[in-house]
Image (cartoon, rainbow, N blue to C red; front, side, top):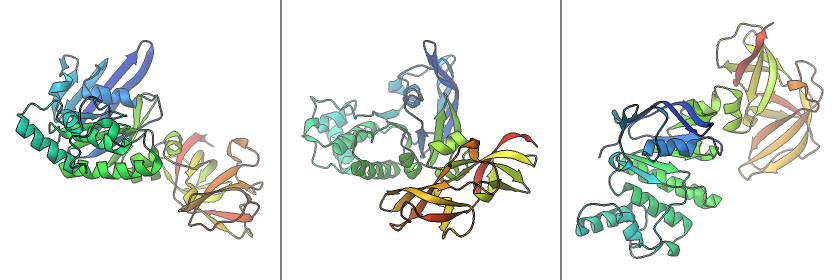
Length: 361
């Protein structure tokens, strides 16, 4: 099968009185990898199950390669959708060998099935593992077997439900790189659900943020990170500092000084705005010029250091939400950083994301 595009429109799903998905719309191009990013309980797995055909939607449509598989008068069962599914824990059959798990569901003859199993195990880096059983495998090896099984019948679409969540940090990083390489080499369309922002941003062609039962933004990772549609999305896809300020002449006056901004929508100036400044957009200087503050904590992450700086009383601009002793996060690359207690000045490199937060003044 060739890779298929995915088009989802107006999908709604409730369980009893609880609405889980409400008007979800999403498009994934053929051959692409799309990550659906959302908090636990946001409906990610429910959406994946609807695409797979394991559950039925209350309303809306799903098309695979232009073919309707879910609609008001249409429902194509899972086995006829041409989809491979990788569940969260792999869900291998414990009584079958690795070869038996990968071959499960293949309709071709024994010799052809054996050749297909051998081909797929080599693809996922497990050549020669045919006769092993699941309890003899590591967590990463079990996930690779699950991926091979999902690819066995040449699906047009592969769905992955948080496939790396049970792995330790180092193995998770290695596994997601290997899985992406396998998916790219086959050319199959893939949709992955995750609550891990780093995972979504690092491997996907596009990231769809699922909040409050709907997709609030779907963009390339760099666009999502640098131009989130609102403060909630900004907070969800990374550390940051939410400030309040006043937009005048294209810049925002705030507790961190004048900041150049990228507005999410046109604004009538002057007006109140919310500004989201990423920690890596803030430079530290010697503390001789405002705005100033004191370093109150330091987290060493190897490749960078995350500082919390408590600001002095600002000489201008509103204190964000009236909070006393307001702290901002600053990320410095490399191991060197000021010690807690150091006095520093702060300077923002724009543009920062901003949204109108009040009526024109």
